[in-house]
Length: 267
Ligand SMILES: C[S@@+](CC[C@H](N)C(=O)[O-])C[C@H]1O[C@@H](n2cnc3c(N)ncnc32)[C@H](O)[C@@H]1O
Picture 1 (cartoon, rainbow, N blue to C red):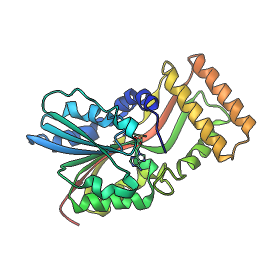
Picture 2 (tube, protein in one colour):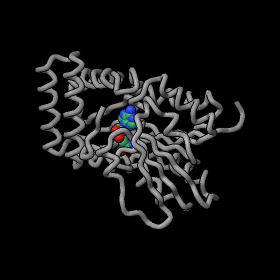
Picture 3 (cartoon, rainbow, N blue to C red):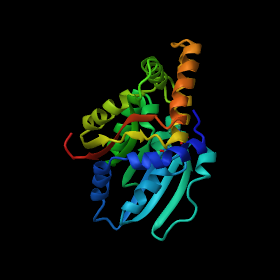
Picture 4 (cartoon, rainbow, N blue to C red):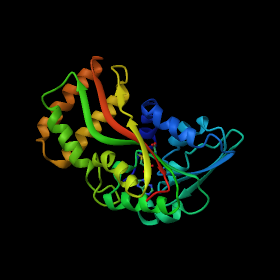
């Protein structure tokens, strides 16, 4: 599955605002006394986690950004402040997760990935990071909660179709979709990790028109692909919701969770 740079750019400020402050603080605190940190960012896109986390870490940082999309990797930051080294690794994480985790690393990060992966891949990630005793900061996993204000009679059926679509294969086998948010903490706890987690919901206000329109269009497309809602109903739902956005009357909350998982030493 591919993600456009323009979509990642549009969502990044909302992701940044949504990231759970307590979880981020836990990550920062864990590395507070380090003079240097090596970080592997899985499915980095254009580097949003680097941009969100690196200013918070006091240590010298060596980031390895891993993704299978060369055009996104090419857009990762080029100019870096002193003390920040960045390299890119083109890798298919479904096939070569282990290779991506090999090499010097103190922390694994990812964002907006775990809802795309299968339960088997999530387990594999947990086992592989545990074998290397690597902490994991995984942000912005969609948890299936959507709240649109004002509500529309069509919302329930569309969101149900979207959540069904979320479970289709995104390149890692049947995707966890909204289940990732619940299962990921359990999978890390099962390999002896302590997990801090918290909500990182998107909250799009009436003035966030562009991301609302993109999100609603994406949901309508997903619903059309699932075929569970008759096409005329999808179209009229989208028209009504777009009208609310245009009138400055629409607010949308989309549930996500962030987690920071650390090996505790007891298994
Ligand atoms: C929703 S985007 C998130 C990107 C970035 N972490 C962010 O938060 O902006 C998902 C990312 O996963 C990457 N991806 C999807 N399947 C992949 C695979 N099999 N191997 C490596 N990266 C993959 C995509 O290229 C994309 O950059």
